[in-house]
Image (tube, rainbow, N blue to C red; front, side):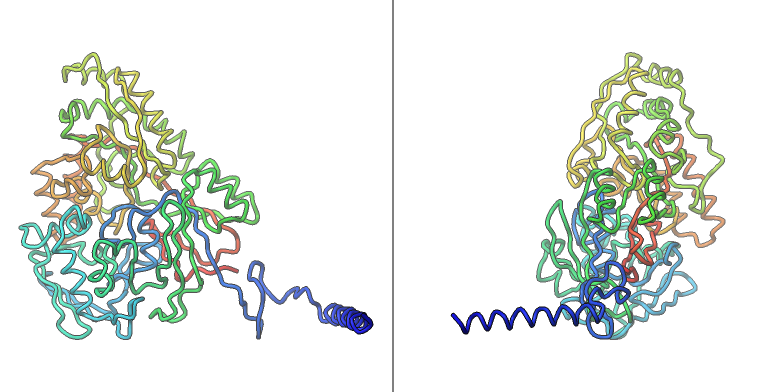
Length: 543
């Protein structure tokens, strides 16, 4: 017992001496580390990982970018995969990516790309010309169900007549040559789009359909895990080919469907960034010194799609009546609060070729009733109105917008039952033409009119991005001519003609062009919201 008492006294004395020394040395470490940086190691460097938690409105559909069309998937894949060429930091000007240089032939039929050397995929596979060829071979061998964007942007697959790409060849270890069947004005911009992230051939050949659950690219972050309808976790790729990037050690994408819930999570410090902020909450964020508000440059459209193959929407008179029946200005005033404008065309005014001379359908319930009478539906009809289950940049609250539309339609004798589905199911069923009318929208992928008019409304894209199943041969001919034309003024004239045809046929009720809002903590540094909605986080840091 005596020895134990002596040992205890010695231990107490040691604690007292340690405490005194700790106090003299400034044990609080005040001033030696930035807020939120964690513990510090030698030379003042942080030993705590920088983890950014990004709150978003919904889960991804897949993490194989070529198989999806939704922005929630691209939010993640943009940071796992690189593309041959990139967009600018906050615009759609073309810059180098995995291709450091490129040259187009005078006739516009051949593009030769010089590739970056020393780049590896996350699984250790070398990136080279053969890897690029393998990706394009994979995509071209698919169909609209597998790879909807490929067909939408390049006119088809394989030997199909409309398929623009004749061949993709490795003309050197780090040189790739594309040969086209006809000139394609937006070709480079298409290549910069998120769906065309270059994937590891080793991974997609081994995994097959499971590749979307285990993505492998060359991007700044590599995939770690995906808990469905909850979180996707990606971590820093130490061998990333761009020097000094990424700054973060890890990014966690957390699905929080409710806008208020996402804002509350941000206010509570549970997340660092929040997408899909309600315009009505902007003042709250701007009034909080610990937060910052981000405006995404506007390049979108929210719309009510009318499936043209389903009665009564196979009649253009009914579609025109729907356009007159809905008070778009009231919807913008109620739900966008100064962060949006009424849409009259299927593409936003910032896109070259926008036709501002078109007069939008006025809110005119009496005219809507007249058109319904002319269509033999003077007593109205019943329909389903599909409301999106998640907030989107072009529509902050799909349910409330649907309720406003439901009320407007009731005034002209149309009874609309609001229905909804889980996000991935909603998109799949709408793409299959199962909806009478559906709320949806589009954030431009490349800043070109082709990406709105051809992708969303051309007959080539029925069953992929043309959810309304609308077709018009005259429109198709104009859009293909516009794709092929390289003179910008001539292209713009063609797109203006195309918008006139679409306006008359009225396959949609265009609703709004929004300025999407995001919010983050003041510790988030160098976040740049991109107009495409796909934000690359490689230069983002946490203080």
